Length: 308
Image (cartoon, rainbow, N blue to C red; front, side, top):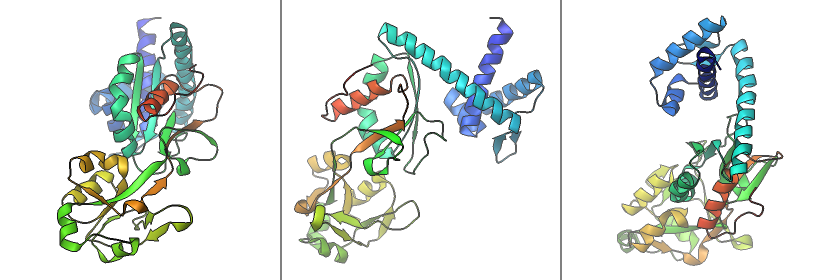
């Protein structure tokens, strides 16, 4: 391959990442270069091809019709290359390629972080591209290989694999707050006590679900703070702002250290497990099964059968 061809191929790969992110800045962060360097490369690419590929303003970036068509074809081509490299690596016993994941922030912190060093050490030819957010994301439209959400949020047309046992949700507070306002003895008591409210994506409050099955109660709590992130909720609870309804796994260390104390333990609620999901196809992306098995084993579950 001539040097010019190699340079063109590299620029086309960069172009695909820019279109994927719809952002020169985000692509630059992923690639570890400056935005101005990418902008220069795209101007050169457009000049070499004689076609305008991107419409750029100070606030937005989008491919032209020609650029969108090229990006789609290139994505398929690069995917074929990654599949070929993955097949070659499987012959060596190791996966290789890019694995693009979209996951809940809690999943990134509680599931991925504990196994990340082991995964990258065991599979040095794998490159993980991670995006953490708590919204509902179309992983196919977003260019991701897989997503991680709670099991009840997995689209029906996707393959879903549980990464954890059923989740457990509990109510916690500081000992000081309990001493000051009293300990709830029934779920209804929470309606008269300060609580850290959970904010949904549309800004509305989420009623706490206490208990299971036919005895489950949905309690519309109120309090001095409403937040949509587990970290913010746990921090507020640890400072005595109010009682909090949280994933037990997220506060295990705080409870063990005595910073938070569970209450209404008989009303703990069981929820769907964290689940990884991806489009149904004949073969999963390289490295995905290996990551799934590392997480499942870390969470006390058996690895999937049929490693390859």
